Length: 286
Image (tube, rainbow, N blue to C red; front, side):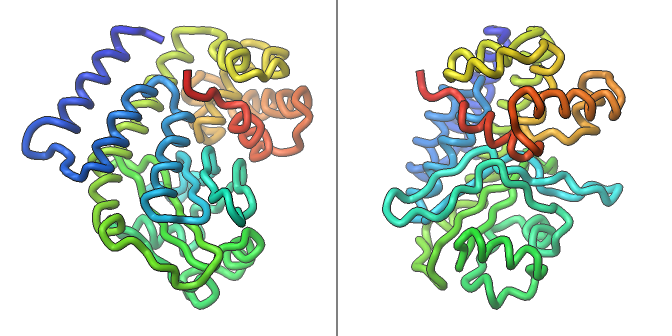
């Protein structure tokens, strides 16, 4: 990581978040901002901190978040893969880490159609859900849900979702009212910046995944070649095959071949399980 670039990015974000007429006023959001800036060079950690914060702010049973989840102008969907989650300690819902959701589903399209919080009091009665999506949520124990699109300006970044095991839960009105601004002014810009810094690190350092693996106690990841490590880390950030190929200047077939090799070496059968594995070994606070 280029320390100067990190410090410059932190200063720029600190000014926009804490100074001037557009500074964040809600105290819980200011506390989140201060914590995220400490881990700006660790995107997965930033997602985890945000998920835990949102779980507590909404008193949710489970919160998940990650990059992707929108449909581009060409009609191609950027699959939403869960990179971080925070679950209630008592009666937790099943884990969704590493699970991917189809961005073209009408329910996810509806989230991006608005700029506020998409609230679903009863999943079983929500007509915007496809039968497949409703079945997936039923399996995951979701009876009610809030979904929040995360943008950096006009550019989509990812999704945050809060789930409850009971229908029509008591939602915190103030938190729900504040969340659109929190997503637009804080979460989107910070997570986009964290993603950009991670990409810069990949370009400057041939083996960033090795250091992450050692820090996280995942020696198996060090068995990947440097090229495979770069591909694995980019996929863990939520990039599609096409985005990985463009970023690294490789063909789609090369990226596909490398991901097959990565899955074989790590003993996972799908890319979503690979993301799950990397999420389980993400570094904790230092």
